[in-house]
Image 1 (cartoon, rainbow, N blue to C red):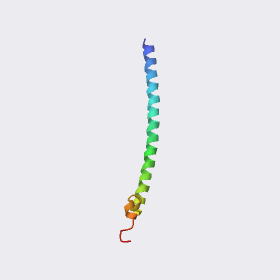
Image 2: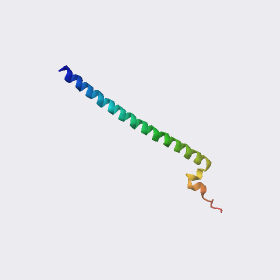
Image 3: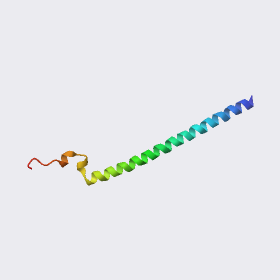
Image 4: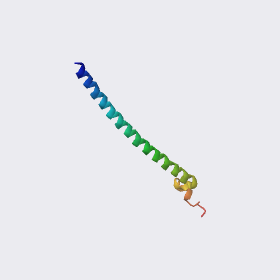
Length: 66
């Protein structure tokens, strides 16, 4: 009976190790995406600081007296 229980515990342990590795891989992939998105946001912030008209088209319109 002890051997059966040990085998069951070993099986559960292996399943948990597999799941832990899968979760780690998912977390790694998500962190890569987050890092890329952060970099993209920084680029967009810099573009916006250089030309606010990129977001607000009204700033590119000519005033009514033209």
